[in-house]
Image (cartoon, rainbow, N blue to C red):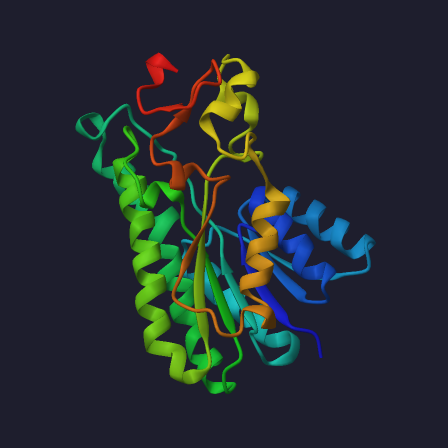
Length: 269
């Protein structure tokens, strides 16, 4: 019997790569996304490659969409084996917290933290009742672990995702359920294309910002999610794994443009 895996925001970017990767290993993917056309395209790609995918279109922050996703998953085999809480966005953004508005905070809360709580809360009774063996993987961000000017609210809610991951793992470990997260940075995706991140800057400077010398590919993030949701990670729980090319480890240090070591004063790079 194949695993049943829920992927929220599973049509594009890291979510799309995760849907394809889990389907390729034999999972039946319940793909939720607010973009129906993109979801259908990803489903068709999965099916054409020999995989299995069911689409549930809707905004996962809405309780009725959460209910439909869980009901759809349970209707396949009566189990939910993997839950990937992937949805997240730094938009709507503002120049700084001073000029931000409460309605922005509320939407960022829905997009980055509230839906994680809602979908996990709806699925959890079933994960417990089926006798364990399930894995939950949340999508946080490296910005939860460092300062990011102009995105203080986004950072705060994702820090909440990582804290939730750690605390929930302690609660549900006795039920045989594992809970982990990834913390991405610099993904070249539909949401954050490389051209947007560069914003006119010289691509040759990328190795001065990222220790591995390039932006990440969505497939690389999806590979870590697949690992965390697999039996290969059967004794790993409660952790947020940075998938960032080394930017968090560098913690503000940059390679000098002249190749002569490192600097934490980028104007002097």
